Length: 217
Ligand code: CA
Image 1 (tube, helix red, strand yellow):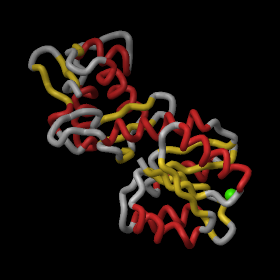
Image 2 (spheres, rainbow, N blue to C red):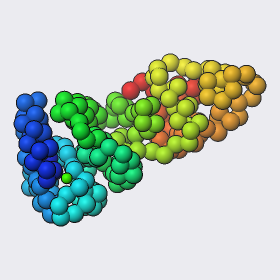
Image 3 (tube, helix red, strand yellow):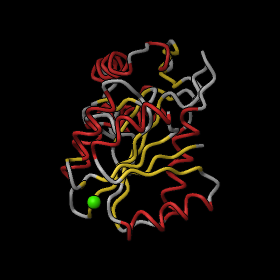
Image 4 (cartoon, helix red, strand yellow):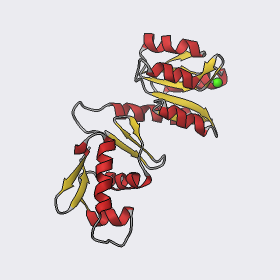
């Protein structure tokens, strides 16, 4: 598994390269923004670890350039507090980020997590929908989708136990109001909206007369 590390600071890059090699990765490096696109094209890395502050350019521009021709997973390295960079990075198609200072172990775990998400058997639903409650993010097939707070809450409940049918009453009381009013039209509207945003009507099944369930992934 080749990892391309883009980092100009030797104090960060050197331990990172050594550490990733210890975790079993094959590592190559770039220190300049201008080297990255040719390196991705030539080496076809499994994952790119991308520092945003490079001497000859902005890592976010590099990410934009990579996305024009490749969907290689990109993990960005950001400084603590640079929340805007992380948000823009995710919007531009980065897959994850780590905040400096970070441990190599943490980064290696993130790379493995990406690799698990990518190991999807064709035609199966394995990990197609990933709900990250900590970050309040949902990805479908690796792509971030934009949900309202209620849609996120509803999907989080359904995703707790794929395959289990949640009654309309339970969903309504957990997401909206503990007092079940017995109508729940709002629930159906939100389910319809979720299905549309997930891009696949079959991910959430209607169980007639009972409620809804998420298909087992
Ligand atoms: Ca830097």
